[in-house]
Image (cartoon, rainbow over the protein chains, first blue to last red):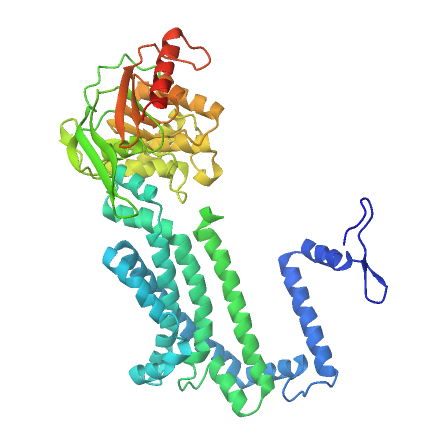
Length: 280
Length: 271
């Protein structure tokens, strides 16, 4: 379809009605002018409104698909029982411990494998084998090795975080521009200084990217980890809600996971902007 | 290792004759394994002497081995035959006595301009305050007063190369190797960098080996120009440039033109 020059392009709909093509574009432009915080709030409000309309329409079974109000009541109920607080404490504690274990070991191993030729060569086939193993498949092994206590949860979370951080750190430290190393050496830096003052900061953007991915994975594997006989935690609560057919409580757990993950990511981006300021 | 005195304030007293920074390249040949696994001869056996305090240019097309030769003197690449020594000491690897300025600047983007220079000063065991003040003095010498707290990402190409030059000089090298240092700059910035470099060179009196593919750049800067050719890389002609400095590309004499024509012809008929 071609429009004659100088004329505005109009879209003729099936009924012969003329639609204004600029309307969605106008709404988009208006939204784009708002601050990111306000935009997010508006999007969430719009979503809740839509959700309310769907559940109020009677088209869905509210036992299976509870309304926002029902989910809110369930959250208040969980809070009054004390379960919400203890779940958050338990889950966050597990995610944090697993994250620290996985990321510290991931960074150390990544730097070692990237800067040592033997490891560097052996790494790719090893990673190709390890990466497809999902966290949930590790749960039975974790239980056999560490029992049903906290140890098995730390293992499952720590392992998934480790893999992401290791991979990113390795790529970052292995791909450092040769001129940085040459400059460092010809300026008289020792091997120790080269490592701490050149290799580490040069790899930092990749390490931070790995940590961010690791933080997201810690939450993903958290639910899997809490399948190994937990008695508290968000993942446990979701399981329990399923057994008692409490979809409202189930939704509370899902929303908790979404909120925590999003908040964590926002915080991570804010911190990393300061740590690797030269990348921005 | 002797530490040379800090650069004198300008105007400098008449410099004493330079006695250190003598580079001898003796029958050096360099090969490397190409992508197909076969050996590529990057540099045929080559002899070269850089007198203390002299300014020498290597000029030639890409692939003529000029950067390879510079990298060998820097201790970055191993040689398969012959030897390179600086003041009688064999080059076994990178050494702060042989400073390098790279085309890509190689400034550390996570450090400020002053911290980049401070990196080079760390080997002298100074206090942090002394390092800072010497770094700022080094920046002032290359015309970057007040830019100490800026990051490389905030500086123009010309400014980056000034910081890189100040950083390399801060480690007090006897020999300064420059690998197409101004190749990425526009003509105007390049001309002002030439002036700056000659000023700094006169103050420090290091031996300079300057790699370029720009014949005019070589003729404006150097005492001696080695013309190189590819396949395998080798020196095909050497000529001395006696005209007094400062020399200008827009105000050349007959000798300059004769030298220029000679080099251009040599480059054209090199194969």
